[in-house]
Length: 369
Image 1 (cartoon, helix red, strand yellow):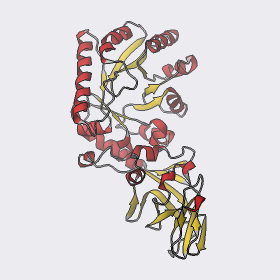
Image 2 (image 1 turned 120 degrees about the vertical axis):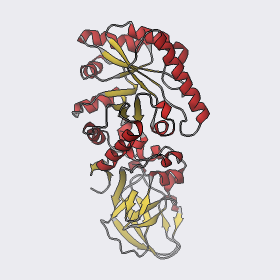
Image 3 (image 1 turned 90 degrees about the horizontal axis):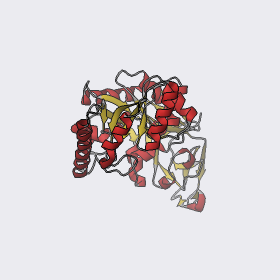
Image 4 (image 1 turned 30 degrees about the vertical axis):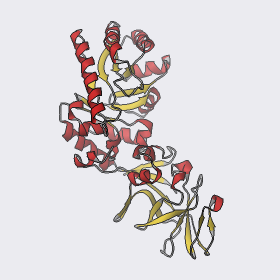
């Protein structure tokens, strides 16, 4: 194995325990493991959550992700957050296994009710309210009417209502506005005598920074994996990064001064030096924008990426360090006292830590330790 991702089971369990202490016993903890568990491995993280007493439900982005978890023996309740096709066979399997569906269109509730009726079951659904992110969801003015239509269908149970913050880590004013809209929607639905057991709004940032948004369930996304949504949240909770991305040196070569490195010769050596070639590139999730500005760790020291990152290969200048072919190279993670974090990488390429980890190729082996 030349390139691999290590996932720390103990770090994920530690982060879940930290949030359970934060939200308390009366609030459900629902980690989000969509999109290959933010790069950490869908099945691998699901199994960690399955065995964790602090996890009440597991959130996924789609019906297909839910079905993948069912095929791999996950028994805890699964909540779909975003999308699904109205596919009879797939929905039947999901409903037989008590998967919870989001609803935000009339055709969804009618179809789910029809399938549930044919199975002589009751399908649990969560009503998504668009309070200002302007993605999927029912507009607030339509929410009460929509909730009444759900409750009129005999084979549906309105088990939850929820929304999603647009900028809970950065814009307090807009966050308060969204929260006010959501509370008003709940109030109007309550006035109709409709009881909804589960109410959730908070993501990682909101759970930390806006306790009033926790209601009785929290969707824990990025922070499940030990990453912070912003600098402010670091002051409120201690987390441990769960992921490291690693590869190995496959070739070492000594080159002369003024040697051009890589496609386009975008770097020219300043002196005689040693170049290490690594079997990792932008196909694997090492962003091409890190060319000539990124770093890696070898034997506990940082070394610069030289030349353009290729599809499958990357070159690093290591000088006279005594490194050998086969030595471990860490792209994200820690070696000794040195560390390269997802936040470090994100800062160099002007993006967010979410994207850095999420774009690690899902075909790379995830090793749980």
